[in-house]
Length: 301
Image (cartoon, rainbow, N blue to C red; front, side, top):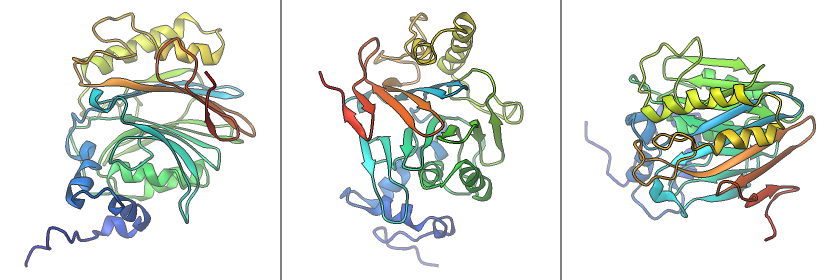
């Protein structure tokens, strides 16, 4: 059988379910499609892709979610917050990387759904939909149940951890998925997640846990125990911005980081009964650079 022309990629069966996101991958970058597609599959085919992240999960009324977006230091200054309104889907605001589908970092949708994403490094993959396509599809879900149903029904190529919450829904969810398994926990007490599998159902699976990932998990849990009564947003930021371990801090700024990752932004979300309030920070111990009011707007300086 002859091979397809290199500039005419064949739509595989996994994209028959997600034609809109296939179209998004093909849009306007003026780059070879094969390169764009592989870039969006980097975590499915390479366990050590430079994506990390730490998430703080504080259930309550409202729920508070804190997230450090950790990525390749070369991306500093080249990422963006994008407000997207696409035909046939939900409007959303997301932190985006160059050349990457939105959805695999942190985002809030017009349905009040909040999603934050942590990298997982499993030692076994699968034949299925790329994890970044699944994360993008989650942003078009009407609610938490539909989002979980999507993940359960789709064949999965790679692995992610998701923190999910929605305005008006009492649940705060921690979801770990790989090609072989999916675990969805309702978060009832404060937790930290630092980009490796920790659920009872998935934590025994073969994976790479880097030194940074392990230290950030243990340090985050210790900090949760130290300040259980503090104001939730301050508590979340105190953990996200911690750098007490000089070699392997939670907030990472070293260009020679052992995982080749730096913290590119921090975000804190308050998910209540009828709204989501959130703020994005690009430096520690400074005022937010952006805040969500009616829409995401720059903070006056």
